[in-house]
Length: 147
Image (tube, rainbow, N blue to C red; front, side, top):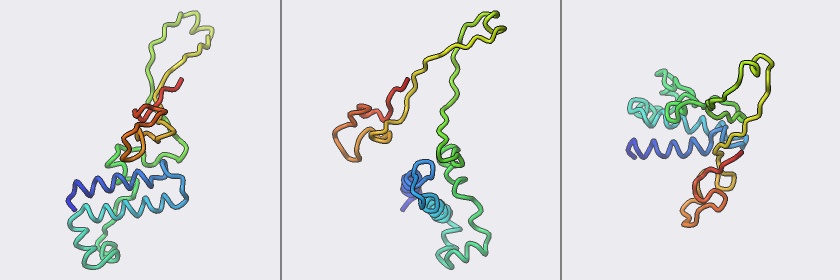
């Protein structure tokens, strides 16, 4: 298996078992195992050590210095340490004209905002794997507009 295939397989498995995406109680442990395996397989020296002496050889050589979330962050740009329920979107900047009087008196205004959210029906995939028919809820886009 070359590095591109390995990376692709790792990303697929890491997303499937990442604790932010999978609420199964064993998902976090599985995620850590996947990340550890990838760390060994992706590094030529660590792979040779593992092939010779298994996990003990890696421990003796000081291998395994990254934790699973660090590896996840390398591929997906951070966010691996978020809490399970936290789902914060990027901050939005919206120019709003207010008068000095409104600022001084603390006027409160409501602002209606539309945003894209991941489709609950297809979980952002646009349809079932390998299906020709797209998700009816999001029309194959993977997101729906909310607000």
